[in-house]
Image (cartoon, rainbow, N blue to C red; front, side, top):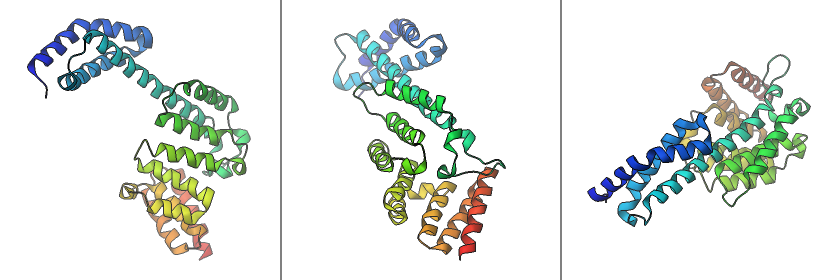
Length: 263
């Protein structure tokens, strides 16, 4: 429980040390991150108010605040770096996502020679730099997944078992239903559409995915591959109703027509 004495000590120390901490962090982060430095210092104070009443005031409160602030700054920089890695990988593949008439192409249909290899290699280099250290984060794993896709010369060469293992690790760190949905796609590539459907059905927060058009596209695709055309059409029609981007609606409409022709 927070005590008045602890609060007064923390707030007083914050007033005394805040300027120095912001200056220290800005020196590490550069002046473009001044607002981030100020936010981190505020967060360090909040953690002091949360922690000190229960664990006691540290012997050197100023040093404690400084270390917490530096750790928070490092975590933020790592998150930004992982995001940059993912963005490089995604950007390197964007131009190949549609055909000459603007129709959306699935990953296995894309011409990988059109991918920006320079951007991909830059992302791989950043991933290597970021992988130094003993902490494995969600961002490491997501970047690793993107790297597996980006470095495969063709769809058949994709290391799907490796990607599945990375998703399994990712799901020990997050309960995101989107991550679970993406893992189901990979499970289907490794074990087949029946296993993919089972993976989708096993998602705990599946209700949160019902408003996501991609969930219905994936479910419909697995159902169609298993010969369940009526179920597949139901999901593709639902996906078409939910999709907000015209090129995606067109893609889903074409898939619905293809499935309807097989009934």
